[in-house]
Amino acid sequence: MLMTQPVLDALDLAHRDPLPRQTRPPDPHAAARARALDLAAACFSARVVHLAAELCLADALVDGPLDAAALAARTGTHADALERLLRTLTALGLLTHGSDGRFALTDGGHALRSDGPSSARAGIRVMSLWWETWSALEHSLRSGEAAADVVLGKPAFDHIGEDPDRLALFQEGMRGLNARTLPHVVEAIGDLGAASIVDVAGGHGSLLAAVLHASPRAHGLVVDRPEVVAEGRAYLAGQGLGDRAQITGGDMFRAVPAGADVYLLKWILHDWDDADCVRLLRVLRSAMRPDSRLLVVDRVMPDRVRAGADHLRMQLSDLRMLAALGGRERTLSAFERIFSEAGLELVARAPTPCELHVLTVRRGPEVP
Ligand SMILES: C[S@@+](CC[C@H](N)C(=O)[O-])C[C@H]1O[C@@H](n2cnc3c(N)ncnc32)[C@H](O)[C@@H]1O
Image 1 (tube, rainbow, N blue to C red):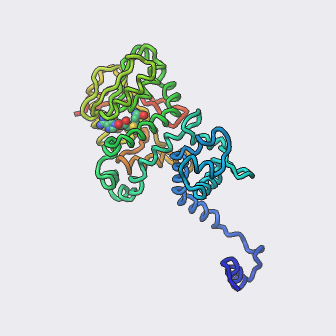
Image 2 (spheres, rainbow, N blue to C red):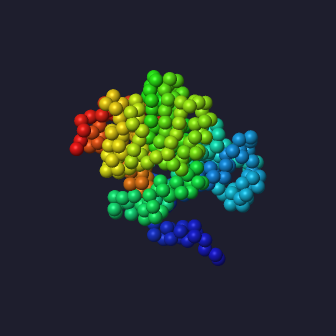
Image 3 (cartoon, rainbow, N blue to C red):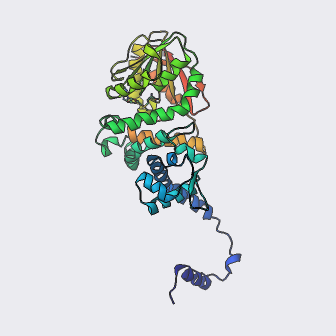
């Protein structure tokens, strides 16, 4: 007789365990073990979600349920292999699997679409840019430095900037992530009146555009790396702001345009270590007039961390910044420290309903 593993297990247990199966006490460690294993396997789920976004599976399901064969024909994939991916997406709660074998989007699944109010596709796709450095996190843990130089052979922004597809993925990802956060950020910033604004490292200019829509008398300029400018110009041209919004190429560590009323710095300081941040903030200080304002938009880490999705998101961003760029998320006192080293002062802090805070910074006493 062929002994299958369950049969062998049953015989073995019966031999070793004098208690009948149903009276054996529950294993008090089972839940902890299962949770740790699920956490360790989360990287597999991440890849499944990423591939679903890459293949535009959700877009294909907007008009109604389809079976694996139809989806495979549309996406150029192997029908059986795709069905296994679709079943996994169903187990993750992003699809349903009907009795007719067809798959449909759940409410959560709509987030994988490339359009629509709940779309997160650009933000999902951009995460793939961090996978190589993430796989070298151990290097960062041992050295305290970015892993980009080791695994990419250069700083991450150089790696992104040298390839047009990578650059488009990154900048579209930033715009996608901004779609969720900008309404909250702009509301916290309010109407800036007739201000002149410089958005430092502003990417394609989605923050500047949103701020200018809320400040109809203001005008502004985005400064970003030269390779970002052409697409940024096209994006801003489509925003209906006329010549109120401009973009120019430059290196923010060398110089930014002087004398603006307001400087914006969103999702920038978390890209850099303290020394680079102080270097950048000093450049900004020397560009600012005594009455200029610098608005720093970034996460603010709690002093003490607790278990939960919001803190986990922040901690993972902190480690991702370390591995990719040598950057970090900061607590309020860590922000105050780098501001004061650069001769700047934090004068106000506005939390927003999303994870970002708006920190208002002014020139303080010059630091030698
Ligand atoms: C995390 S993105 C943030 C973009 C934008 N502020 C936003 O919130 O969507 C970082 C930006 O910094 C830009 N950047 C990196 N190094 C730079 C430099 N030396 N000078 C100017 N921009 C730079 C990148 O091109 C990128 O657009």
